[in-house]
Length: 283
Image 1: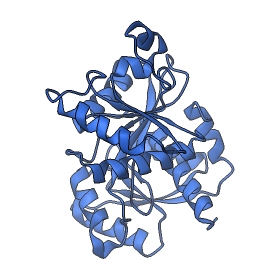
Image 2: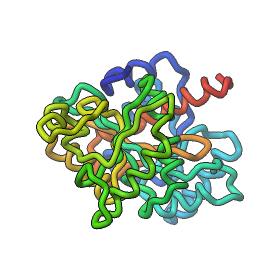
Image 3: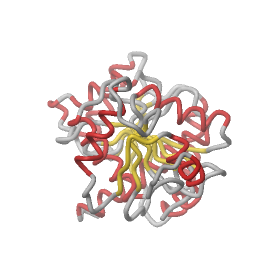
């Protein structure tokens, strides 16, 4: 099991550099992260800039389509435009799954990497979307060598009630996947219980994953996004994020991300890319 970004960075040293198409990077922090990644021999950067960001996006998408680039990275362009191009059927970058965002966070107060999803793509959840969210995050967990991830369907409380529709939804999803052999899922489950066996004991809740949760699926995009940003901003955590569900991982950066976070996002996306190639037997 990988438990740090340092380990992720180290693992990348055994691979050949990846041709990274970067869509319209403009800020110094992005170029600093790209320079560091190139110095580490992780990437061969292919920069697509234009006064018209849509043209830069078009050119970068074409580079991936024509096998002149391997992985796509968001620069200074809005996420909606990027994702619209990725899911456009004519670009042939989409898979059969829905796209979803996975943030990976390393906290000094938790012994495992924290995977939160989906805090960046899907504003509304359905059973079909959750199915893709789970499949996508399992791909990330496999990359991080988590053999049987523990998944929490987060809610305010552990009891299903009509007053909190997300608790009913969480219960339904858990019942659907309860007998899965490749992961353990519980819910509805409050965040404190998912994070702490002590909290579970204090609240009289029997849980197999309390204090050992790997994946935290939020009740909505806002709550999930808040968790990640809180940990990064004042939780002394480091992290990175990617979009999964296309034919390759898409490295997604926020304008406010530190250089370290941008570099971690690049590293995470590249490791997922290499793992997917290995899994598909093309490397």
